[in-house]
Image (cartoon, rainbow, N blue to C red; front, top):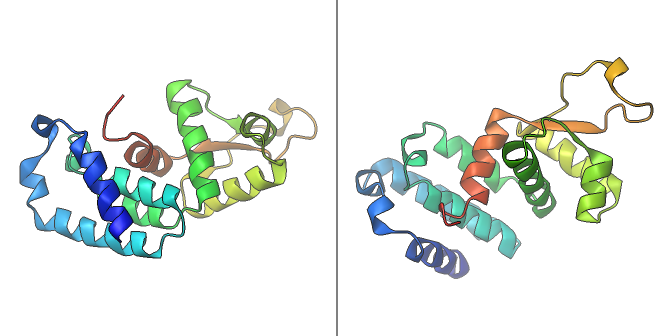
Length: 172
């Protein structure tokens, strides 16, 4: 808990106070989200998970996220992500949002992350279970031989989750 509090304070200290949604910061909804985040952080087994939860909570106090109706859903989703899934979700976010690649192949992800393909496939399947990734709608004819089932894409929940977790309070 101490580490989470320290991380939240670190991230908040980097935010221009003029950007904060002060009305939301003093709301019962924010208090509830803070409790939800602290509970999840108390069960976190890694620094990455704690940092991801802190980023998400801090992003909740900055518009437009502070106006979003899915904050509790996104925080709950983040609380269930493994470190491997966080890394793959971050990869999805960079490649689909920033580079406009709509579907990602497990072989390419594994190569770029320097991971065994099986670890990527397991992480992607976990992301599918959480609703943040899916198998893209494609025709079998469009896929090269041997790649069936190895491509994935990010869902709207995945985009929201990555936006909360991966953007460190709009500090770029």
